[in-house]
Length: 231
Length: 382
Image (tube, rainbow over all chains, first blue to last red; front, side):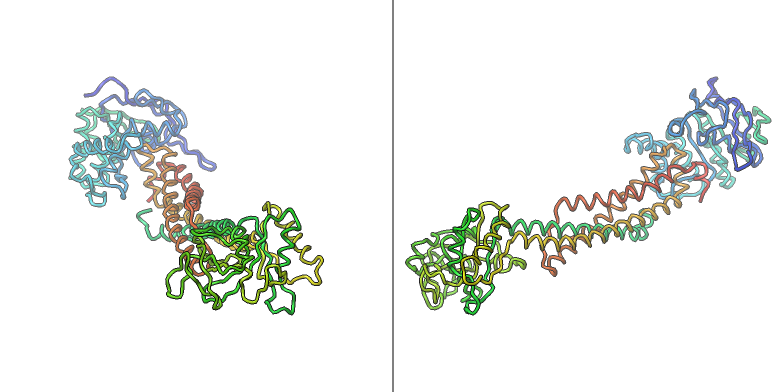
């Protein structure tokens, strides 16, 4: 399912956090490309810069310097409003702690990104329900997140990420808060998405996750030190 | 907001009391304005009263028919003069000795029959014009041609006065009398009166109509001078300009309204601070939610609007509560204070406008804080 088109094209990316008197270099001259339909795992020790890279790739933060093109758009130089548009049209986020809004129903959580795009409420609900069906949770649409198990919450989060038909699915330790059996089920879901042609970048410590990826990128001290293609 | 109903409810109490005070204040002001307009329309904006301050005992000179006669011709400012002698002979009913000009100056209209005439006055005709609530000896309302007894004299009813709205007026007292209970008889037929040309008939009052409402003060000065000129003694009278009396009453109501207005301002201010406080607490508690919303594509403006709308809704709920409380308070003022109150559509709009603006101002800073949160930092907070 992999194509030659670059969904992610990062060149010389640098992120420096300025504190009162010191500068912390979180990423230094990082370059990478992710092809359409590719499943990439980013691994590294804590503090290596992998989360910073994920936030930059997710348009939640802007780099200090460098180029970041997502689906042909130069994200690195965008203003805040344009970054919001990119997040709700091109990027689907899956977080370790699910990040569902407790007061909203499962259906409302999943349709949330669509509501910021100006889609009619009824259309948003139809699409959200379709997305929930894909992860096998349409029967839980009216429940609150507190009524779901960890695995179900993560599947809802995946449904929310998929509802906008994103160019790139980003996942931050998607199995980190789940037991091994539930984690396996979530990974199988990611593999299904991969087979369906989704481009996926996962940040993980979990070797099982990394093994299922097409390619594993290792980060250390803000630099990419290794990029290996899994057999 | 919904998650903390009690806290939200308590925070808008200030708005409730503030808006209630605004509504009550406006109801009093509006009621007073309507009341003044209604009373002025009944009395006419161009009348003044010369009211006798002595009884008809004669030790001190009272207001006399001769005074009225002279006043009618002293100035072109005076359009018409209506002398009257009020004798409360009957229980709950007034017998008023009048001249034919009385009904015209007092703006009384006939429902049926005819008015008193100069001929009735001259002939001392035992006829009368009565209000609609006058009852005969058999207890039924009198009609044209019926006979009423005044001081054991019989008077035939020749006219019925069209119904007047009754009034519990305090400042204008007997001047704004209820003619529904009045029997108007020719002044010359009153007990003890001798003759229409007898200038010494003691009057209760003279109502004077000026050509123009602007001339009231000037006319009152002319009247005062005229009453003392060419007479051995100045009659003991009081000159009353209803418009001025009403202005004094309006002034008292304005002072009340100002005090209530200050209470309203403080209430709304405290309410606004309360709402701002609750919204800041909301932002602090919902940091993670803000981060999630930003992560899935909400712009800063959309986040700010979320909190602004919540703040405005909160204060509008307070506005509804305030409106209800204000209406109850206004009703209480009307009932126990005796003031007229009126809740107009404008006061309702102002109440909601005030609540909405307070919501906007109180929500603006918390909304700005929420919008400016960094999405990554916000999602990390618990």
